[in-house]
Length: 395
Image (cartoon, rainbow, N blue to C red; front, side):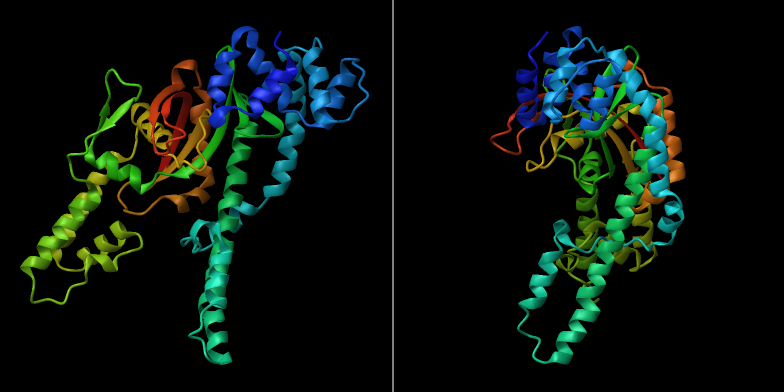
């Protein structure tokens, strides 16, 4: 059996959060599974587990309790039995926390979060450094009409986002194929029972990025003889390029009109420019409507298309938070709107149905093995492999 200290240190220093590689390396005799299950216990539950199995301990430190459990004869079945016995208590606590909050979510007006990179201080700094406010009246007007409204907007969005997350996470906790963790463990939110295996997963609840739709509209196809599942046809033009090309031509043939410049549509360019084009005339409106209808084909509707979207989320993930952990995605998208689906997150009843359908039919065949080549950061360049699966709620 592998040494606990070496496993603990290796997992703590796993390069790029490569949980998949760690689990593959220590797959034999289910060493990784047993270690990670023990790693998912907090000190209080470790003490109870050890006491139940008549194993003595002197220290109350979490790591030392983990080592005692690891070096003991406690089996994976023993760990699972203990976790299962705790499940009703965990569910009761979570249900109490979110009771009635679904109704609250329905009353929150959903708009953009209003704060770039979740940094409220940027708004405050811009306000305090604004030397164009020459009187107290101007100062107060700016504070009340601009700053406070944006902070309120951000707070409402943050509440909506976190609360819907909490409600959705409860759906997973209740499902028999989900093994919850009893403490926070980085890069793992829960384990899944998949046939005769136990696989750690990180939960990602996210809208389908417009960047994905831009590539999907160009065309994404299966790649051959590469450590990359798919390849993008970069010669085709994307949705936004199509819209811009139409508008440039329209401006050229309607010089007599005073029309906006494309540069004026800096925020949500695709949606804002499309709405503007729709207002021009019926022919332009028909053009955008047809594009919106075509957009629906880029929203994944089966597992093959979802695998493509999962691959995109790994290959094009930001380098600052790069991680190669196994992920279960809950995607959100509008079928015929050029806006992201983040405000669909509050439709928790429909999302629960999607999640249960995915988990009820869970098997090794439903787990995607994603292969991708990452190159957004020179320090992270390489070929990666990972497990993934997902569902999508779309309207």
